[in-house]
Length: 380
Image 1 (cartoon, rainbow, N blue to C red):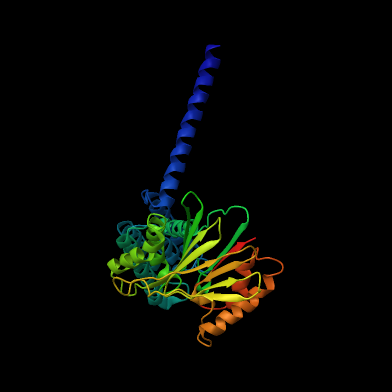
Image 2 (cartoon, rainbow, N blue to C red; image 1 turned 90 degrees about the vertical axis):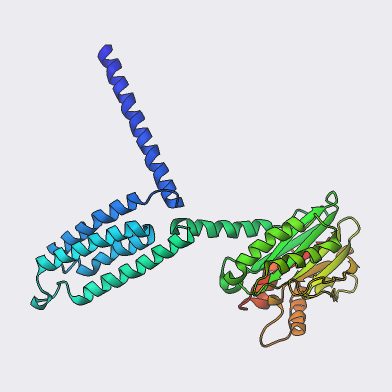
């Protein structure tokens, strides 16, 4: 019994030790790929790979060429900090010297260390060091950079989500960044205020497009989301204009359209800051009517005044908000683009506008190299 208990105790201890080791390795790897841990694991692996490659080159240079040393150098440029990278480079330099000594002078035949091989390895090492120094200066390891960009994209997407509407209302929205990128200079912020009876939506188009405008769009979407609902409707665009002016960006203007919709009566107000007009489909006449409010661009002049226009969405009516990337192009003016957009939208009048936002962008501005956004508010 005593020997069995001792064996069981020993087995339990071994299992606990293995479990702790497994948890420790998993935590170290998670920290490493998040960019929070040390790079000693990667450094050790790369330092081991250098003599392994050197041995293979000496053993069979036809299959493992001397230039294969660039492989750990490239990996080191992506994985290591600058100080660790220098240690790897020193090991690679020693490996080149060993290979040259064992294989002999390059004049004696092929598969030897030539000046070109040394130059290639040195050039790759220089580029790797520059990349590592840039990452170190920015303070975001490459392992964390992709995660951070993904997080930023998801935050913009969450902030652009429209709230659920009560029965009798339907909304559709589609955002298409320029060039098929994941980031856009167009964004939407929306909120239901006054006990949920009022829907406020702001569609904004930041100057620039794609990645160039994404950072400013993220900053503005957070600021606009905080302002929306915290101020009376007539105070939103003046406050947003003042915010942009305080940023003092070299390319800091933006256009925006602000919809304030009463979900009980269907009455609405539209405020515009240099934005393309909204379009309203009247169920009675079957025609689209432009709703153009007056107001200057955001971030251009202090003390700007924004005059609203008023309207009503009756049962069957549709209100369409969009950015200029959908209707403007180098070979046509905005009036022609609006005509084309309404012509395509007429196809959905009978069947309904469910899923229409994405299809309208595909039909009207699929290959346009600009950010495009389209929002539809329908009263059933």
